Length: 567
Image (cartoon, rainbow, N blue to C red; front, side):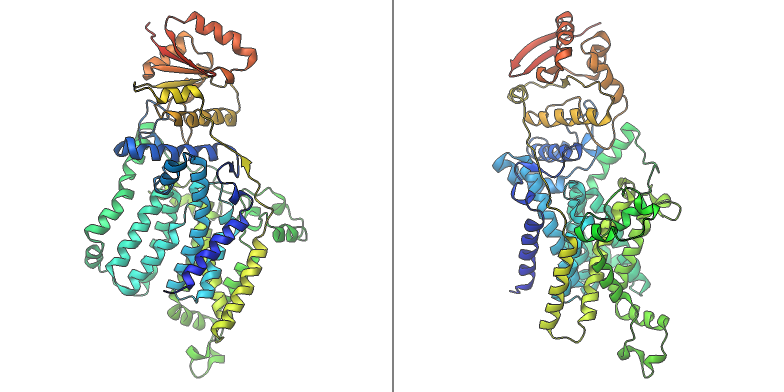
């Protein structure tokens, strides 16, 4: 058995633990950021694992935003990640641990996938290891740890590895494995699925330009029934998303898709922050970056070495000194197809990311698949994979003609410099746990069908405050997973905001009319969340409407009421 891949995997895992410290040793009780972007995947993983056992064929009819259907399709479904999370949740009951374990796994797996892809396209083991470091640990990728739907793109390089294998060997088995990884990626992260489809499209176009026959009939035979079945789960999730879009009237619009130019040259690493102190005080650099998109200097240097049309006497004929740059590029294109494929991929993803007026996003944002992506700069994650491979080719070019040991030494030095350049302040985790109130757990013991409104609803004008209250009730619902009014995602169903404001004065005639027509049967009042200055008024309203809002059970600080409103 070859030890190289296993050694690389172990090194990537060790680096993940080291670079993510102290977060990496506190995955059961901490998160990297507090807010709705953390609450949402915690709930989503919990819902998916619950649905695996209780309603697998209706998993997209999640318990939020009742009475609307297909509400899991309002955001990332994370079903692929939930398959990995299920054993952890069933064993420990800790959804936070499951989320963090998968996020950390995604870093090491992304690096290892890039290593395997590098080996498939001809990189030496040492150069492929460098490629994995760039994709796994460069800031634009590594700092997505707290964006669960963006960190779980680890299956992209695995799929590309087997697509390359198929085109190299023609083995149907490689194609089917590639389709399995494509399906898994689409189910794990819709963003990752979009990145992968773009990458495969570029691969196919390059192969066709180089004379690869389309051979459509043979491709279909190679896919076969097995390939169709492997793709079926990813294909089936299209329909809930389409149904949800029709039901709520959602359409992707070209909103503010540009980003500050400073985003492309800044990152929070020690090296980059030091360098930025010594550059001219240009106005565009003073703008606050929208994201940390700079991958470091050394990856670009190595990539430039890889693509620069150096004179190659072996391919230049008898008069190498007289051959021009264009001729040398043509030679390189013919002999290094994969290098130029990934150079093209890096350029295309950059074209997606740049804003107006030159960015291509304004022309393609509406296309199926691409319209799933809200922020086009995220395509640079695919570009980072391409940059990592180019850096690997740079290592091999530097070490051309060297012994295997010498090549390894060169790659080791480059790896140390890369990790030094990627170094940043230790990740500072925040304590985090899901505390489900006793009343919610009691509801989970009741067999009756209930549709629940959680109160109080905050009347804050702050969108962030309202959304945090919604995700709090979503996390509470993990005690029973019965339908609830509250919800949070990338979009909202029609009329939700109006109903939300009506509930700030519940119970009164208008709010009772609304929730009854929507089909709700019960209300949970979390007394501890009612501001002290408002408690007397809330108690007075519940007393006034006691005939129609009847107290059924009290547990801890929560009260369950049944609704009996008739006008």
